[in-house]
Length: 244
Ligand SMILES: [Zn+2]
Ligand SMILES: [Zn+2]
Image (cartoon, rainbow, N blue to C red; front, side, top):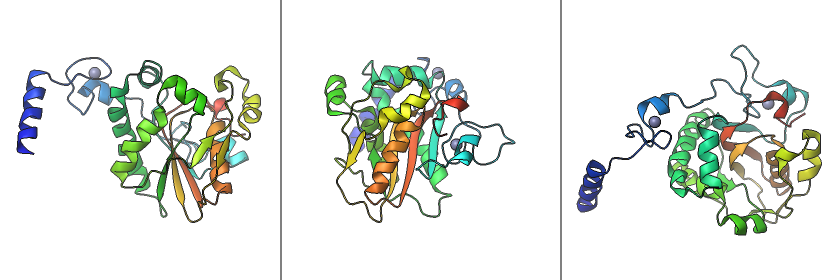
């Protein structure tokens, strides 16, 4: 153990870690001080869907007040803007898998803070699944890569092969948002009995909220008592919450 620590310290001294955003020497986990301080945190987000709100707004956004989504709360680490949008693109499409650990750390920190206030915190973690076809194309599921370290840090069991994506929908972003609801309907299946489970469903980014809503519905149908969504990044366009 001592030996491993020594080599680790020596490696760090010879090859100091680089900030994942700007490449300067990292000083705050995976970031340099400046990039860490500039991360686009959500100062105030809707308690249900995490869409960023002005400081004076009520706890829920207009869309959630109008119709509450089928998930109980959303925890989002940052806004889906620079540098998170680029980092997530690199992670997912550029296969920069070394980003999984620092991005998961960011999620873990925010989850810990938020969950401390929950009276009935989650009991299990589930990763947002990809369809089998897309998983084969990409070679990995980014949500699973984030969920593994988050679940382990939060000391919660990660339920794999629980939620399955059975319908591969066209990319949500290419559709008008009213169409997105139809597009994801029936996209998930869950054959496990989740009675008594409170699920933290992890995804990398929430854009419209429709995919998370459909997945949450499926988990509830399988018996889950509560479904909380945990995402690294939340798109900030109010009309894109997709939770009308
Ligand atoms: Zn930096
Ligand atoms: Zn909301």
